[in-house]
Length: 332
Image (cartoon, rainbow, N blue to C red):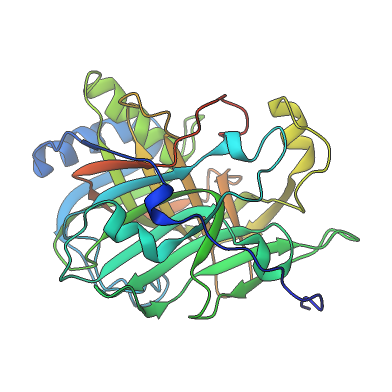
């Protein structure tokens, strides 16, 4: 299945026109942080272990990242936001991912890996779709590796498909939450959890442990996790709504939900406490090799579920093109 209509032409917003706010994040001692997270996650999972390990080669399955690691001047990028999607989508909020390293003052002599969750470039299929950003950009702004996938629905039935983006497509629409790093191996948080006994999903449980133990600090984590067993609930956005969506209930009714089988690999970003930048504090999109993909909500088989995760602790959070008029609709 594919698209037969010619893609519309839309020029991304010039980088020099985008507002950029950069703030440092708190970086606890990694071993102390691992201990805090392990103790806290045991309130949500029957088994939980967190350790500091050298990042394995994440270019290998099931992670399939565009670079082997998560380390090297790690930053959280929050681009655009839900106020550009609801009540009505602002299609002109269209960005070139290749602009981001220079915008946030990344090292000019290092390639930059960007992974995370966002809205696909609507011009690619002439429609809306979910995006699992996974791209490596060289210091000159050229694509070194493109592993980004998008998930789109079909309007006449309850089916969907996942598409690999070509190297020539490096844009995005409306909103995105990304981890940017040099993609190098290094010390990361290695997390294993099994059998969920609490009400929160894996990412929310992580974030709440940080909020409880570091209530005055903003800590940012970005990385990847795989739901190894069980089933997962995801959503995929359909075509952009022609009717204003003004409540979370209306947004939920608009979204298309699916239950899919593990394994399911997610690209994930979270910030424990918003330092006044109007952030989306957690956002994870995922995929597998069977053609599934979408926005991770939670596992639906808690007794069967196992997670394996690798997260890097970010040094800065970078807010790009923050909406002037904001709201909290649709941030689940």
